[in-house]
Amino acid sequence: MRRASAMNLAAGLVILFAGLMSGCGYNDLQGVDEDTKAAWSEVINQYQRRADLIPNLVATVKGYAEHEKETLEGVVQARAQATGIQVTPETLKDPAAFEQFQKAQAGLTTALGRLIAVAENYPNLKADQSFRDLQSQLEGTENRITVARKRYIDRVAEYNKMVRFFPTNLTAKFLLHMEEKPNFTVADEKAVAKPPEVKFN
Image 1 (cartoon, rainbow, N blue to C red):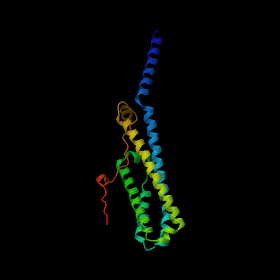
Image 2: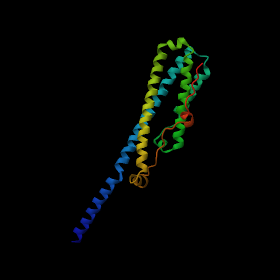
Image 3: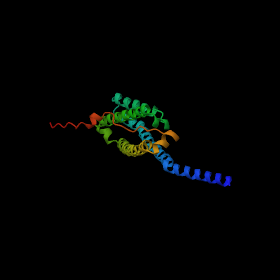
């Protein structure tokens, strides 16, 4: 009798535990964490694609505009800084490391913008087929980066909600030791919010 009672108690505890686990969001948290990591991998993949295009772009511009040494060196240096940051899954848990990565990529974007602007001064360079192909690939990559960042932003928002909202926050905090992940931000929100100044000459 006692044995049957103990078995019933054990079975009841297993059912209760299973019921609690299904409502705690354990699997949902694991799933959304994996989605976030996958979205982040795509961001890194697109940034790497851009970095791989840069040496050919710099070499092509150098052939036509060698005296634009400062601009060319700026791009090379910005690329070195952007690719020199070791990105690991831990980067997603460290807001300072994430911000450093974001600043390095923004610096590379700015340097590339200057390089493309230089091309406007060189009609022969603008007409060069390999330069036009590289420029087209670079523009396509920038679009892919934008899409990948948007997907990552959406996944992180979903992840952060689950980590913060009750009752999944209990599972995230005490069972899985999950914390909010940093997200992409705008470097100067005030400048972005300010309406552009339009001048007519």
